[in-house]
Amino acid sequence: MDDEDPIPSIILNPAQEHVLTQLGAKPKERPEVSIEVQKNLRRRLEETAQIFSADIPQGEVLFINKHQLTQIMGCEKKYLAESNEKFEWSIPTARGTLSHKAIELSVFWHGPKDPLTLTEEALSKASEGTDGLGLWLRELSQGDLAQLRGDVNARVGSFLETWPPLQKRWRPMLETPIRVELAQGRVVLSGKVDLTLGHADGNASGKVIVDFKTGKFTPSHRDDLRFYALLDTVRIGIPPRLVASYYLDRGEFSPEKITPNVLESCVARVTDGITRLAEIRFKGREATVQTGPACRWCTISDTCDEGQQFLKLDTELNDVI
Image (tube, rainbow, N blue to C red; front, side):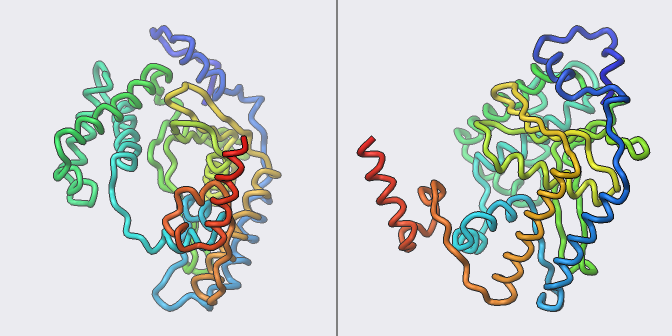
């Protein structure tokens, strides 16, 4: 996005000005990237995918998104247990989906924007759907629906208060799917980006990728954005200039410039993830255990010896402190 042209006839508050400062860049500040970067990244991903392509049963696909990648790079045993669970909608999961939909509506909304109107519109459209979310919303109690409406309204209100109106010249795109197919489609890397701004200009990086979050920063947030940056680089040939998590409840950014070194680090993580997933799913390797804070909410901690040992030591340490 270009920070040289101010938004006409709109007075921005300090938080909105901060967004422009964080994300804007003059043309001379946009680095040029060799197309060899993209070729090297795709080659490394393709080589890893080809190693396991023959092990993938006919008709199956090794599908990898940011959540699976984060899970498999942690405790593999926990990943396997959770991957076998049926997904169920809840207020926390629906809150994120509906908040993103309401924010998307705000970008293309004509006339005055208020968070509750956008929230109601997002809820209404989702409730009319024939998918799992629509069915879940139609069966929700009035109390739970009121809580969900309030949670989404708060997130949308925070966005409208802290972000400047998105201009057409910034080329905003919301909920944008990104997909990279490897090994003749036997391995698929996939993601959905909350918001992208700008675009590559020739070999110059100009795009900014933003992920909306609430709560505190965790390293996985940065890993998620690097994954998106890698997919976008392989897809169009030029990496984004910047990625950033934006914490709606705090009005704060956690940005990172995308460099060839960052992409090299990410492709190493992704190839490791492909290897782990393929070995466990298709080659019969036993899943390893990695204990840590996640043991506290792991669904199989009661039957995991390593997890029980960690929780016991963790409790004893907390008692001492």
